[in-house]
Length: 164
Image 1 (tube, rainbow, N blue to C red):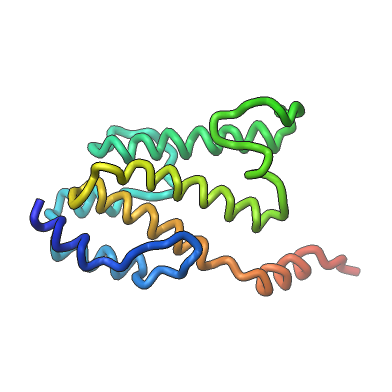
Image 2 (image 1 turned 90 degrees about the horizontal axis):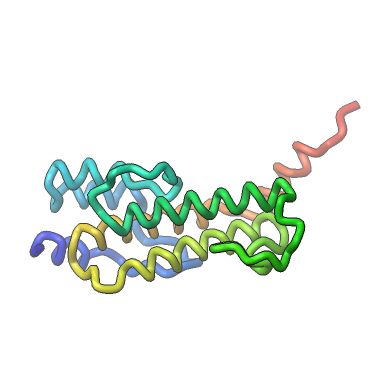
């Protein structure tokens, strides 16, 4: 437990919407100094995009995988038009989380993931679960920091340009 205490206490605070002060690669490099090889392998296998339910030893990560899978399933149903009744209750999605332009919707979905992870942090101070949850949040912030509205518009216009 003491190795987690020192490792976690030296990490920068993560806040949704702010560029992280540490990158994933730097985090893994620092983690390799503190974690056992087995824990490091488990950590490297932790991904915010992973929705395949596996026998992860960390219950909070398994919960996140179930949440991610359910979120994606609800998005599929919504995008297929299967949810014609917008008042229909879903587990994760609500009308406000899927309204707006694609960038706004993606940010709202990332915030939903962030909040889910934050709920799992309670009671997990200075243990491997907290290290794994921190890593998930770091991945979300890195994804969020890649969004660039100006570059996105340029790319969109280039893709939509009618070729003659």
